[in-house]
Each structure stands twice: as C-alpha cells, then as structure tokens.
Image (cartoon, rainbow, N blue to C red):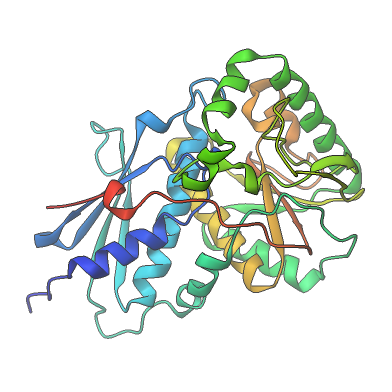
Length: 330
C-alpha cells in the first residue's frame, strides 16, 4: 500500500513542537527539511548558531538538537504517526544529525508513553526563580530516572557532599566566565535587553532572566552580568537545591544526541509531575571541571547536563523562531 502524503500543515505542526525544546542560550541550533515524496524529515545542525568559546566540540549543540528530536517523536506519535529514527545517517555529512521517517502505523498502536507527554511540550519552561525548600517525593524521582533510562542515559541524584562539590564547580566556572571576555561576548550575543526583548525570536530575553541572586546556593546563570535590567529585583534562592546529573556511557556525537532526547524526556515527565526545572552547564563548559562533576559514589559515564528540580513559579516562555525560518519542504 502506498502511504498517504503528509500535508504541509501537519509537518509544520510537528516542527513547531520540535522547536519548543531547550537549547544552550536558546540559540535554537537546528534546521529541518521535509522530503514530501519520502515522508522523511531531516534534522541538521545550524553552524551559524554554534558557540565556539563555550561549546567548542558542539556537544551542547547536539544536546539541543537531540531535545528537539525527542519533541518531534512525541508530536509524531500524538499525531498518529510512527517515527522511525536514524542518528547520524551520513558520516560524510556531519551536519545531518538525524533522519526521521514518518511512517503509517503498521497496525500496532502508537507509543502511548510518548503520546502522554505531548501536553507538556508547551508547558515546559526553564524557571530561573527561587524554588521552595520542599522535598521531591522518591516515586517522582524514580520516574524521572526511568525516563532517562528509556533513552539510554542515566539520571543520578548526587549525595549531599557531591552536591556541594558541584555547586563549588559552578561557582568556579562562573568566576572564570566573568574574567573571560570571549565567554561574555557569547552570552551578550544571545541575550536580549530592552526593546529588543519584546520582538526577539531567539536568545534569552530579559523577562526570562529571573531575579538576581541575593542569597542561597542554587546554580542559576546570571545572563545580565554587569548590565542593568529595569525592574528586575533580587531574591534569595534555595540553600539546598535538588540537583540531578544526566550522563551517558560514552561521549561521542551519537551519545550527545541520545542525551538530548533523554534530557527532554526527563523535563517533560517533570513537567507532568508539576515540578519546575532549570539547567546549568557552567562547569560542563570547562574540560578540567567537567570530569569533576561526575559523582564517583553513584555515577559513571560522562555527565552531559546538571538539572535543578523543585517546586516554584514556572518561568516565562522563551521566544521561538517562526517555523518558516527553520523548515524547508521539497
């Protein structure tokens, strides 16, 4: 049987969901191309949105594209399609990160565990606000660990002593960043202040910065730096932040793409569990610090992201580029 063609509206909706994924500094480093005759979506990296100083290996770029790929899978299943994914299908085309064939279901129902995550795609936003000093129930944490494992990754809750170590490493990385002009230049490039924030379609606008930290130990990046932001204010953050470390067994581009999918699966599960989240990659951007982030008592492999979990206000939605700017249909 010849599969029915997919209409452009359906494809655009899938890509719109995909691009709701998080990415470093909200750079949105992805491009999509739909081959209508083959019902095939190509996901490629956008090198113009790379960050040579803070992401020289493009690890974070791959994580962001992996998160977008996971959203695409969720959206496709929700639409009654069967997404069949191949990672890095063409070694001679390094920018091509994944191929997704949008097949008709072969009689078996779509992946229900993925479909149930669809509402969380639009509800998930990074929160750079203080979280409550409230314990996250163990069953919820177990569910998040299972979500990571479904995508071939491991989510480790570090022991309190190692949480202190991670927080120290983040502070070290923050100090290095403040003294490195090239790092600040990249942050300045991807932040939007004043009138620019209102019309931004990428980057981190000032309304998503959250308050300045007046106290507490939560690892929240201050995107403003020394630049004034009107009516921003300051607040005390949690003294005992609940951190989680997402890791993969190896540290290659395919692992980074899997880590991005695992990250987004964890974030969507957390959203459905009414948790708020934020991400920190400070210490992971420095090679000598990154190896110290791994918890020697409970984790193995390579740490790909540090998550902060808890209860508190949801952050505002960060802007997204129009689908027409990231999708080509041929």
